[in-house]
Amino acid sequence: MGKEATFQDFSAGSPPEGQDLWRWLYVELRAAILDGRLKPGARMPSTRSLASQYSLSRGTVVTAFDQLQSEGYTHTKVGSGTYVALGATGRAVSDKSTPDLLSGSRQSKARLSKWGERYLRKTDVISAPLHVGRAFRDYEPAIDLFPTELWARVASRVLRRAPRSLYGKGNARGHQPLRRAIAEYVGASRGVRCSPEQIIVTAGSQQALDLLARFLIDPEDKIWMEDPGYPGASQAFVSAGGRIVPVPVDQEGLIVKAGRKMAPQAKLAYVTPANQFPMGVTMSADRRVELLRWAAGANAWIIEDEYDAEYRYFGRPVASLQALDRSNCVIYVGTFTKMLFYALRLGFIVLPEQLVDAFAAARSFVDRHPPTLDQAILAEFISDGHFGHHVRRMRQLYAERMDILKAAADKQLNGTLDVVQAGAGMRTLGWLKSIASDKEAAGAARAMGLEVVALSTFTRTYTQPPALILGFAGCSRAELHRGVSLLRKALRGDPNLVS
Ligand SMILES: Cc1ncc(COP(=O)(O)O)c(C=O)c1O
Image 1 (cartoon, protein in one colour):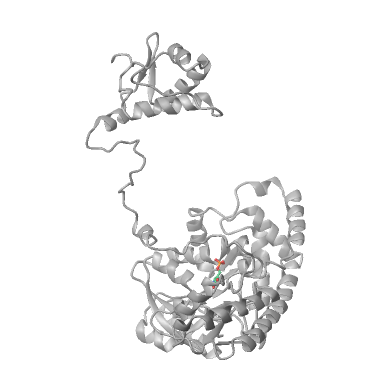
Image 2 (cartoon, rainbow, N blue to C red; image 1 turned 60 degrees about the vertical axis):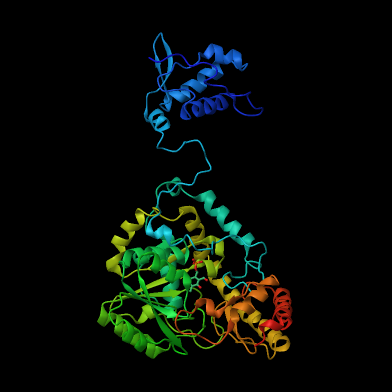
């Protein structure tokens, strides 16, 4: 074997304070092996000499040596000592064509997948905002009035009584009591016809859309998307390789005739019929029937996203598309992130029976199943009646918050922004009266600390007049008033904005 390593080969400075000494020594020796100071085949310094050089105990040095040996950096010859292994590590290091393994600042040139590459230029990464209930955040329900004490009581009862089995492997379709509760609730509230076996519990609607996109879409498949429409859905479809066909929306919802003309054989249509995102219109009965007829004839799927259908402030609730479907082509998606709180990250899919088994099998290899204990808490919250009570309370509160926003805007923003009295949901539109660019107007509002999005952010082919999207459900009365005053300053204060 090679010659014994000298202390010039390995010189580690002095041990730092407050760190495991054996780990420090192990890391230093490993670095010396990797960067070639301790050459393959060389005899390691003896444990005795290292211990005395660095004032370490023999035991500490032996532990570091054991770790190196168990990871394959060294091997021991009985009666002869410990040697640096003649492994790939040494060859890679001594090969001049390969870069130095230890110069950590280099970026790998290994390629991403096409899927990953799509995200290289994306900047919209979910992160926690600083303030709760900031005007005019549009994606969160009222966290300020969520009954956290009640939730905590239900959670602690569930956790105290949970059988040990709930700590083990769960069900890829979701926790059975939750699926039962969801099936009952969507049946009674939205007319959805399903058994608990057709429910798949997901991590909010976004996971539902992502899984469905992978399950249903092949590269180049055409997808009807409402224009303007929900980017969370189009992003999932594009990621799966689908080609978006933007279909215009009018007062009755998605214009089915236009879709038929552009892509009669599309694979899938994504719609938000109860409360179109972001225009806030309800799909008419005629359009619903027209859409179902098209899907049945074209052998297409329809994804019905009912993200906030519970919140309807006037008029009679319209039953879901799924309730009218006789061809088993509608896949219904719902979410508790709007009905309870965003961080819960629980939602669900109602699948046609024929898809359930294959979908559950596919899901088993994605995230196995959703967290069982969280599902058990939610199931109990629903079956105890707290969920129904909370939603009724929120419906009333959001109607009041809509009125507060409308009254304040009519008074303070008259002539600048015409705020629509939303009949449903958690957000509304404000039409800009004297400003041509809604993106610039939204930018001016954001500069004031407001959370405002331009309607044009969500349009693809069919432009809309300039408008701002204003969330109201999650904002207190005081915050709505503060928001409207700041919006007034933002929209009136910048002369460049006025066309
Ligand atoms: C159209 C639409 N679908 C679904 C969601 C909810 O998504 P998630 O359940 O992933 O929070 C939103 C949220 O803003 C939405 O606007």
